Image (cartoon, rainbow, N blue to C red; front, side, top):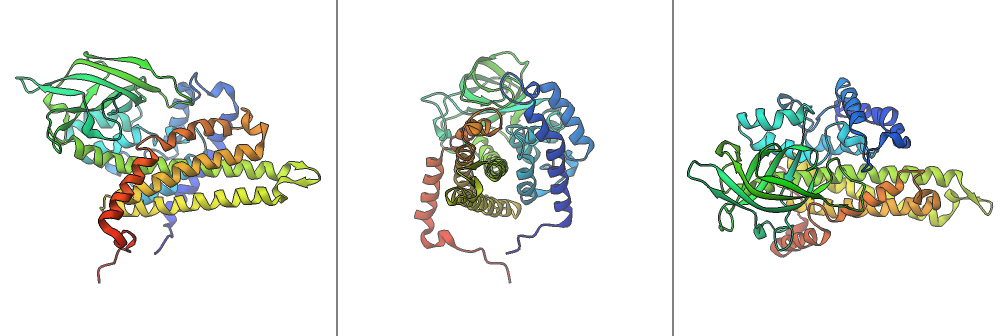
Amino acid sequence: MDFSISPALEDLRARIAAFVERKIIPLEADPAAYDAHENIRTDLLSQMRAKARAEGLWCLQLRPETGGLGVGRVGMAVCYEEMNRSIFGPVIFNSAAPDDGNMMVLEKVATPDQKARWLAPIVRGEVRSAFVMTEPHPGSGSDPSMMLTRAEKQADGSYKIHGRKWFITGAEEAAHFILMARTSDDARKGLTAFLFHKDQPGWRIVRRIPIMGPEEHGGHCELEFDGLTIAPEDVLMGEGQGLKMTQIRLGPARLTHCMRWLGLAKRCVEIARAYAGERHGFGVALSDRESVQLKLGQTAMGIEVGRLLVMKAAWELDRGGFARKEVSMAKIQAANTLHQAADMAIQINGARGYSKDTVLEWIYRYARQARLVDGADEVHQMVLNRFLSEEETAFWRWPVAAS
């Protein structure tokens, strides 16, 4: 298997790395760079986005005809790690969730008119977006078959939406929304995806849910729908195709989370190694202590395991597969590795790591959600066991090239 990358991709990776190192990481040390929810201040974000676009580092995940760089999933895996060496990185390059996943699915399945109206403004950085699926108990979480929000078709072909959603990332700042609702009780064809704008009547944000934080722009919100009307031209992929649409969106979007998390995990190792090399106690540098060396070595291996799983999933997606098994493995590994890397780095840095003198405590709080979002660890472990039960020893088969 060839893990080498092209010179063009290496050049792009190096340019992203240099931009992050020179222009983004220094912002993290300035308290004035943060908004009230501990993300980059929106006016500063606009300035940095303009600089990223000027250097040709914008929306690399999309095709050139859509406004991106067309690097494919493997190229994204290489570059997203570099972007997320900084906690501010992905959003500056227009490669942060949920916009990232929304743009990719709209690029793939939306009609030309829908792309012009709903996708192009996100690509240009004029608006943010949200994906509206998760519901309070007893509604749908990881299991979309439990969805309670309903879309009732009207005589004129439009739909009226009633229901409640929560933990909708970015909703407070979003202008464009992809909404999942039930249009029938059919097990496979009962869900439909809809597009709507924030200014349409018939819905409201009930609250911005307080979380451990830090937060994405727009927070994690609870929404109520009380008669939102959706025109037939704003149905995505057609009535009854919602489950298929979520499968198209969520697999690649989960993988991009993993790519970004590995970048943060590498940053944790960098901070830990730097401090261990300069901090002495009882006449010995921390970096010379075997216990510290074991922590760093174990974390480095965990990151590399995650990178290999991500790259295999990315390769499978690039060749047209669904990579469901590969994405689940990558999701578990990357999420847990990030959490362990942040914990390890804080332990090595001691009180300094627990303070706001480094970004470690920010990363640590952010990392805990990784094992929950886009399917909890246990959900993906169940998915893997289902594959194991169906495939048995073929679970570990190697793909065979055509002769």
